[in-house]
Image (cartoon, rainbow, N blue to C red):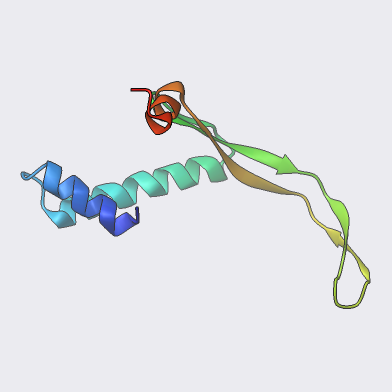
Length: 94
């Protein structure tokens, strides 16, 4: 599902909202999630799952073209853990 698919589905389920209102709501929600993760916060949505950051420490890598060793800096990567209800729905055991 893409962002535009989500907006269209949201607008069809709530006819009192225009597509433009739904687009603004989705944009604000995704920006809030992104800024919370950028600040290092953990996000938990009950029944859906939680988003957090996994830290990868710096390491020594290798340039595949030249074989030269390079230092790869550490970084934080977003990580999603599905909730129990979402796992049950995906597995088909409603």
